[in-house]
Image 1 (cartoon, rainbow, N blue to C red):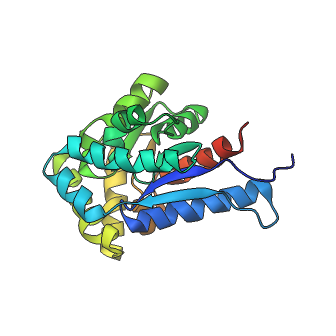
Image 2 (cartoon, one colour):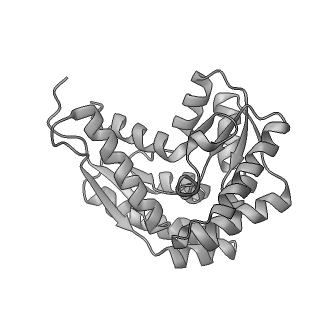
Length: 236
């Protein structure tokens, strides 16, 4: 198949900028792998201020979070994006509100993840991410309802520790070996509770631990999301 250009991908970034940079690299690596030559994906990125959104999330003001992200998504739509995607997992808490605010598709991060897990024949997974991702249900419920996948999460103490590592270290660019060891232990505990695989549902966690370092099969939701975006950009 000869492809001259991709459809324009609308990236909602800045949550954090570290994760946005990771998305940009993964999307263009996937585009090059598919198209060859000097090709990369055509994209627009609206970079939001993570400090503002992190504060609103901590206050539980998800209505305002949705409003801020939806405004950015409408800007991408007006600029010609064929579809939009959130370049972080936690903001998918308000994915339905954002999707309802625009007239272009929003590529939800849980869907390519669910497809990959189902294709692997796995029925029960452990979910790793921010406290919001592990506790608010927007990711686990989508996997359960759309793909029939059972989801378990770490204990409350472990969720608190992992959230601190993500917010106080990884989103600030700090990668500590001791935190990598904590993550490995946490994943091992999920395996002992019956998880067949780990769902690494945070854009920053791959900065800390590669998928081959987990004690069980691990699904990198960011990589899967990026690859799905390229497939959608090439479709039609």
